[in-house]
Length: 463
Image (cartoon, rainbow, N blue to C red; front, side, top):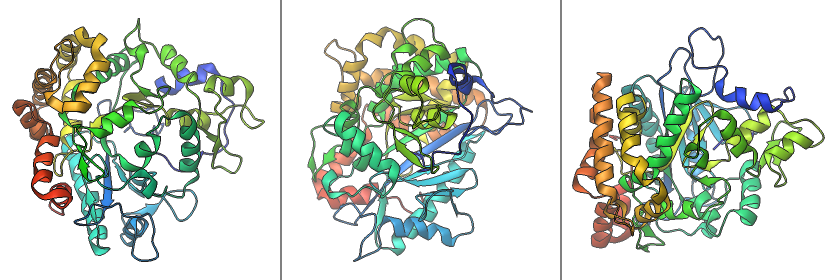
């Protein structure tokens, strides 16, 4: 998620500006422009977002944001400022976003700690930065008596027991989603964690192919990374509760983007989709954020915002509250995976790098998955229920699709010639065995309860 800052006041925007947002400036050398999420001159960079859950050792109970009785998540987060590598991002104090070079560390609505990495040319660079930040966070947590889990769902505490991080953005989002977000919106905000990745596109057509694959592959990726089988301290009966929660969250802004499939892809069609999603946030006059009043962005563009014309800051805020399985901003973000076991987080950007940045693998994956376009909903349900063991009522099994995707990705990584296949190894093992991470975690839970789950999912310095 983003900061409370709504950005500085800007020029009024028109429909054409919404289209230009995606296509200008491109990630081209010599553009002279700084594009968030991109490196000038790099058209095939990779970024990672990795969310961690702060819990009490042994019990797995959520660590509060702040507490009179013991240091909370905020204390560990602000403890990063003892290192010269970190600085507060612009916005209200105390900060909920810190900067480390081009990377940022953010506190999510339920106190989840999100590492939003810099864009890098190689997976080794992504991994190096991720390990450095993880090490800093784990040290701060250990000093304060708690641990960070690489796990997709708070395993014990209910959403009503987790306070929202005191941030205007999150309060406004909660108020909107209470009315429109479905019965599990609060679980989505406070109890879930994922690993995501972002990728460049070089043209409108390139973005369309990548978006199409991101949507078609989403349930397969959800099954491959399924890692949230325990809820409320008990077996949930699902491989990925997180996927099930997202399936129930505000259908106007979640799920798949149908314009990736139906007819010819264009930025105009994507903009038309985004215009009709009810807005949650707009830029406030004080530079922060304010409620959008449930109006669609089409209405804001036509009628204005709080007595002024709509601006690019409003559009960027709006795009950040579209929660589809993949979404386009200046980069393409893929969002379907549970946060996986410790030490395996790089498998997600590796999988997608091999698929999206190697045209033969991209086309092969599209050919593999296109016949199952009509069964996406059934595939998502099967992924949430059984992970890689899932199959639809029509007999489509997830495990063979996952094995094929991993093989295509491995070929794509090999073609890059950087030895990056090693990052894909955990996903290759899950796919070959037909077992999602949830299965091993559930076995440990059955033997040793929540304490065993915490032991298995806790991030350690060597990760």
